[in-house]
Length: 373
Image (cartoon, rainbow, N blue to C red; front, side, top):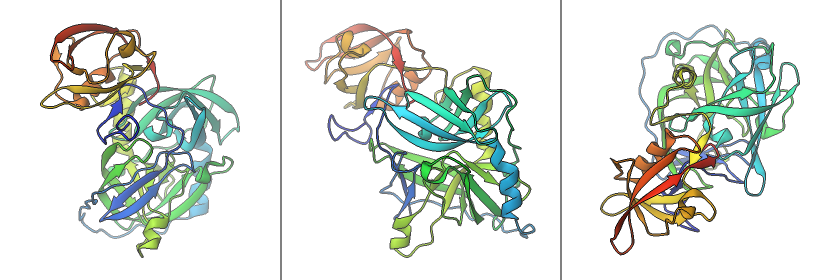
């Protein structure tokens, strides 16, 4: 998503987006941290620092038994593999089974841009096709549904509000994206409210993830979407990011980061409610088929109207500025993305458009089916 070839950080394909290669990098206090799924997963890096809170320190719980906890949690995990257009390249990650009939919690970036999603259940070894029920990109959380699944082992969901600094936890997931038995790594919680400012190196879009649980553990590529478990075997977080080799290179101890399970489950409940919000998308993703950036002084500038997709077919051209949708003013590219986020494929929208020469017109566009964006 950056200028036509090297797009600006704000630019994005609205309601659509595939990528062949991704790797998550984040920077904490100017230290790059790696997060990914293997060589094919989302990667973020940041020019900014990360902020950490200073939560109250309480007495640590009894030591965690990594073997017992892993044996408890692993049967309720899945390995995820995706394929993304146009080249069919994909990503690999992890997921957490929430229901016996196949609802699976994972990280949004694991399925971002995916055309197909295939899931292998660790508990029974069966392979399922999956569809994305919904997602919140701002929280990096997605909910999947497995086709034909039944009687799956489900995870025991804990309460992240009860987590304490110095508490021992276990990060479990599909390390290296190779499938098979999940890999686990033990560590202590070092912060309960970390903020990582991230840059997706495949599309150069920046994202701030807040309220993250930080752990002193080397989380591996492919564990994204996997479980952060407490000493009792309850899932208390969804693995999202990790520091890695770059942190080692500058003499810092690598850390892992997870979305608190309370935050993740709020997104899940919103998706299950069937009511979308500006951040929570539900059902198939709609797309205009444009790459956009902020216009000056206002609006969403069409940097590229992708050939064969709705905006191009409706006559929008590079340089047009979208100023409204269905009578609602659009002041930024972010506002247009949010407006499309609550629409569905085949919906018709009326765009207010200002051309390069200043002429204004109304353009009716039928949205197409896109990939999770």
